[in-house]
Length: 202
Image (tube, rainbow, N blue to C red; front, side):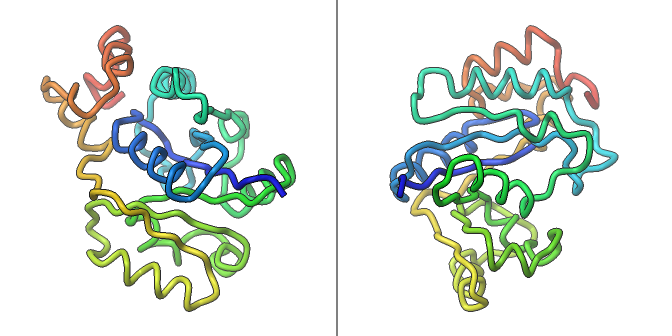
């Protein structure tokens, strides 16, 4: 059987250095053949939130991963009119790639996984690679991984520094006229400036 792949889904509004750090750590620590960045098209948990256009978000991811052969981007969810759910995407990617699929998520997602669509099926069918990050939902990601695995799921905790920035933080900095360049790949920072993104609510 082929080596597993990692799937890093997200709105990527915008993609930032924390996303890239998660992908690199997962690639190396979990022996993945590649990491696929999967921009959300219609994220059901963010309905009503101002989000940059699919074209801008896709372009920013392409810029961020340029030059890393083991990273690629997939527009599967961007092309779906209906909301995308991880349990369905997992089945589609297993069909496409015929190998184990691991979803790379932040600790905040693991803490709230029980609220996700078809939670019981997620536990049975999906494998998760988890990166620690600051979250208002919890503070002990190792414990959350253990509890998830005790329910029959699969959650692997990455060994890496906690990610201390979110896309929301970056948008707020930019909206207020600040400089968020230290959190962004330089190509993404330049793209945001060239297209005047996030100067308002999008």
